[in-house]
Image: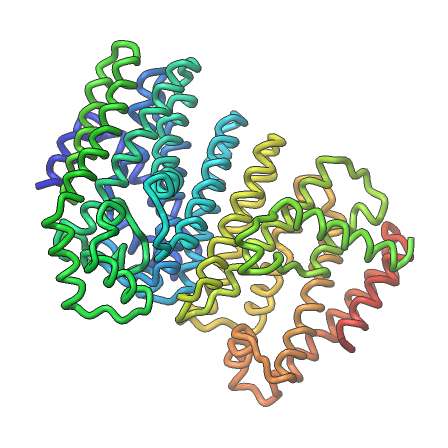
Length: 324
Length: 252
């Protein structure tokens, strides 16, 4: 159902999204059979492709030429894919979107080399753009994403963290790449500075909302919908928004202690999920996500009249209300 | 110019690389970047030999070193279990260094080197992953893989700055040095995965793998000596350094 909604939402961009998909396939083509298999495995796992979609929509506000725009849309999705491959090594995750991860299907080293290959392909691809500003934005984003991941590891199971720590973390983990997708689409589309700024800020706010919703879904969705056990974030020590809002709850505190010692039973996990799902924390987290969405929509309002304004709103709202 | 000056230049390059990728948390858990001094020597060879070498060459050499450091971090990841904090941060060290090399080159607007290095990383990864493929490769193909892993990024740097006249000596020198290292590691009971693959590739032959690799080392030495004797572009001090590098690598 959700996938249908997304397809419908992307329908008038379909031909360009198809071009992006084809380009992704081409970019991942390798002389190594193993890299080809691993890449195909990733492509088949699919994804919402929200980063390239935001590039395309942002560029539509300017001089839109898919042959140019794809040179930034494709690398952004490749960077996202590569970071997922490496993240699965870091998180020791065997499943993603219901499929085995590269590291589970082969091993950690294969995942490292596949990720490095995809990162390099992304940069190789983006060098067809001569505009230095594009490279500076993208490079800064890549470094900041990494810094965010380092902070995430440092913060694992840390009990004295607050909302500020959480927002700082998700900004780098997710919001930055979506922010850059909008900004880079706008830059390559030749928009003026003012509108680049609006789209950039839109991307940031949507990205924050996206990650909050992701963190909520990790508790509220089923194992099947998630393609991995619900509550995985907390099992891995990532204290996300619903847990921060519930951190004084004695059962949650005990669960965090157990998870940090690696002694969580299935019964513990189900009890933790029940508490989170029945608490006010989910409602409060949704409220915070909606606040970011509202800010995103204000940025859309500030953009010049264009048929894509509605598309931006629709995609933002879909992200804020999605169920997978 | 003597060996001390060469060594100091290598040390200076190393320091510059460290400075550009310094990161409090990553250094605390994963240590300093791993760099191979033999590769750094060949990276600096055009400079040491008196080629025109400006700020852009210097920054570019630093970024090539950073890419090596990035890929070396990922070589440290355990095949089956990377759950420790050190291993997790080692994954990120590699990614962080990779982001930093791009950031530095983007800042200086050196798009052509970004392209060359990206292509080089792609080729290197395709060779590194061969270790995990089920396909059978010949020993010659494994020599080629070692050569690509050792030389590809320096070759790309030479291409961008028209230093291709040093490619041949760099290829021969680095392959020779690495094969020597592989033999020594094996002799000390620390056999690498690539050595095992080379061993498997000659399992049907009468000669032992040690003799086969030694034969390759000897022929590379002859090639190197021939180059050093006939080259009229390389300074004598550098020729001597390269000879000592091979001899010292063997003894060490």
